[in-house]
Image 1 (cartoon, rainbow, N blue to C red):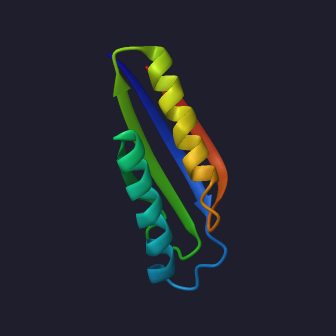
Image 2 (cartoon, one colour):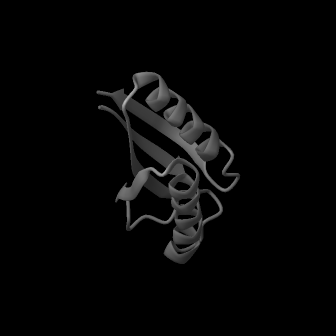
Length: 93
Protein backbone atom coordinates (compact mmCIF):
# COMPACT_ATOMS: atom_id res chain seq x y z
CA UNK A 1 0.00 0.00 0.00
CA UNK A 2 1.33 3.42 -1.01
CA UNK A 3 -0.08 6.68 0.37
CA UNK A 4 0.31 10.13 -1.15
CA UNK A 5 -0.30 13.17 1.06
CA UNK A 6 -0.39 16.83 -0.01
CA UNK A 7 -0.76 20.09 1.86
CA UNK A 8 -1.62 22.94 -0.48
CA UNK A 9 -1.77 26.61 0.52
CA UNK A 10 -4.05 28.81 -1.56
CA UNK A 11 -4.55 32.53 -2.01
CA UNK A 12 -8.06 33.56 -3.07
CA UNK A 13 -7.70 37.24 -4.04
CA UNK A 14 -11.31 37.87 -5.10
CA UNK A 15 -12.82 36.61 -1.83
CA UNK A 16 -14.43 39.47 0.07
CA UNK A 17 -16.02 37.30 2.74
CA UNK A 18 -15.80 33.83 4.26
CA UNK A 19 -18.81 32.92 2.12
CA UNK A 20 -16.87 33.78 -1.06
CA UNK A 21 -13.91 31.74 0.13
CA UNK A 22 -16.06 28.75 1.10
CA UNK A 23 -17.63 28.70 -2.36
CA UNK A 24 -14.20 28.40 -4.02
CA UNK A 25 -12.86 25.87 -1.51
CA UNK A 26 -16.00 23.70 -1.61
CA UNK A 27 -15.91 23.54 -5.42
CA UNK A 28 -12.26 22.58 -5.46
CA UNK A 29 -12.71 19.92 -2.78
CA UNK A 30 -15.69 18.47 -4.67
CA UNK A 31 -13.72 18.26 -7.95
CA UNK A 32 -10.78 16.54 -6.25
CA UNK A 33 -13.07 14.02 -4.56
CA UNK A 34 -15.07 13.34 -7.72
CA UNK A 35 -12.17 12.98 -10.14
CA UNK A 36 -9.56 11.31 -7.91
CA UNK A 37 -11.61 9.72 -5.13
CA UNK A 38 -9.24 11.54 -2.78
CA UNK A 39 -9.81 12.42 0.84
CA UNK A 40 -9.79 16.24 1.06
CA UNK A 41 -10.26 18.64 3.97
CA UNK A 42 -9.64 22.27 4.77
CA UNK A 43 -6.92 22.06 7.41
CA UNK A 44 -5.97 25.66 8.25
CA UNK A 45 -6.89 29.35 7.85
CA UNK A 46 -10.63 28.72 8.25
CA UNK A 47 -11.12 32.22 9.67
CA UNK A 48 -9.25 34.12 6.92
CA UNK A 49 -11.04 35.39 3.82
CA UNK A 50 -8.31 35.05 1.23
CA UNK A 51 -6.24 32.11 2.47
CA UNK A 52 -6.96 28.41 2.61
CA UNK A 53 -4.96 25.26 3.31
CA UNK A 54 -6.18 21.91 2.06
CA UNK A 55 -4.98 18.46 2.99
CA UNK A 56 -5.36 15.71 0.39
CA UNK A 57 -4.65 11.98 0.59
CA UNK A 58 -4.72 9.21 -2.01
CA UNK A 59 -4.00 5.49 -1.66
CA UNK A 60 -3.03 2.83 -4.18
CA UNK A 61 -1.19 -0.46 -4.40
CA UNK A 62 1.46 1.09 -6.67
CA UNK A 63 3.69 4.11 -6.21
CA UNK A 64 3.45 5.07 -9.88
CA UNK A 65 -0.31 5.35 -9.68
CA UNK A 66 -0.06 7.51 -6.54
CA UNK A 67 2.38 9.84 -8.35
CA UNK A 68 -0.04 10.10 -11.29
CA UNK A 69 -2.92 10.87 -8.94
CA UNK A 70 -0.93 13.62 -7.23
CA UNK A 71 0.03 15.10 -10.62
CA UNK A 72 -3.66 15.07 -11.56
CA UNK A 73 -4.50 16.77 -8.27
CA UNK A 74 -1.94 19.50 -9.03
CA UNK A 75 -3.48 20.06 -12.47
CA UNK A 76 -6.97 20.32 -10.98
CA UNK A 77 -5.81 22.82 -8.35
CA UNK A 78 -3.84 24.84 -10.93
CA UNK A 79 -6.96 25.06 -13.14
CA UNK A 80 -8.93 26.79 -10.38
CA UNK A 81 -8.95 30.35 -11.72
CA UNK A 82 -10.19 31.85 -8.43
CA UNK A 83 -7.25 30.52 -6.38
CA UNK A 84 -3.47 30.68 -6.65
CA UNK A 85 -1.20 28.00 -5.21
CA UNK A 86 1.30 29.59 -2.81
CA UNK A 87 2.75 26.34 -1.44
CA UNK A 88 2.55 22.65 -2.39
CA UNK A 89 4.07 20.07 -0.04
CA UNK A 90 3.88 16.49 -1.24
CA UNK A 91 4.88 13.27 0.49
CA UNK A 92 4.65 9.66 -0.70
CA UNK A 93 5.00 6.83 1.78
